[in-house]
Image (cartoon, rainbow, N blue to C red):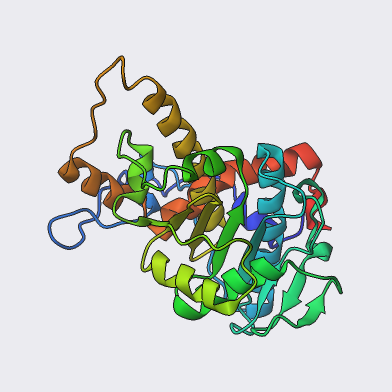
Amino acid sequence: MSQTATQTATPSLKLEVGAEPQETKQGTNGLPQQGVHNLVSGQYEYRFKRPTFTDKYEEREFIKQHLAGAFRVFGRKGYTEGSAGHISVRDPVDPETFWINPLGRHFSLMRVSDLVHVDKEGNVIGGNKAAVNAAGFKIHSELHKARPDVNAACHTHSVWGKAYSTFGKPLDMINQDVCVFYKKHSVYTNFGGVVLEGEEGRRLAKALGDGKGIILQNHGLLTVGETVDEAAYLFTLMERSCEVQMKVDAMDSKYEKVLVGDEEAAFTYHMTSDPESLYADFQPDLEYEFEMTNGAYLK
């Protein structure tokens, strides 16, 4: 495993003797400060902290490794449907360009060397000299333009996402996990078929607003994040949330459904939805993929 990749698996560091256990940090409005520290108790540092970089080229390599790894995770989870589906990530060296998967490469086979570097017009400028998904480019390029904070976007035709999207309604706050999307996801009801025009991409970006994800009616799911890890974890969470929602709804006529209250949902959102925590949430899946493939996606 390369040196940049090992930044996701740094051994736990013992605090100096006499150091106090980590405490909740205070933020604004009387709420705790957001961050991965909220997940941690005891005297050890958490090994899955989001790294920082001073070298943009080193950051690019790290991002490409995690992008390829995210595809492997998606493949293992079954988020494939022919040539459909794409994940993109903004290039840290040239932020007006991004990396995306080549058209027709199975997610479970993705490697760093397979990734394609494209400019904002969809021209291949580096990496693998291969065709990219036209619809994927139209969607992702407009999202990157509309949201400077969005460095990564994920969209696939996953089973439960497609199934739930037929109802054209947002997810109910029925458990702790789905509260990550509390008032931060939307439904896009103007499905116009395969996205081949820039205008459709711009409408999707507008529908996303400042949210973390969209349910595309009669189509599937789309999530975004500051890192590819965040966007990928949010996708796995939204897909699982659609599955749980449909199973709960199937029992709704027999049992009364109780929703999480707005106050509790808002607090849960605050404590679990920040980019640092969501980055950390994806690392166990990524580490598992590295173990199962002996790091094949890094090639």
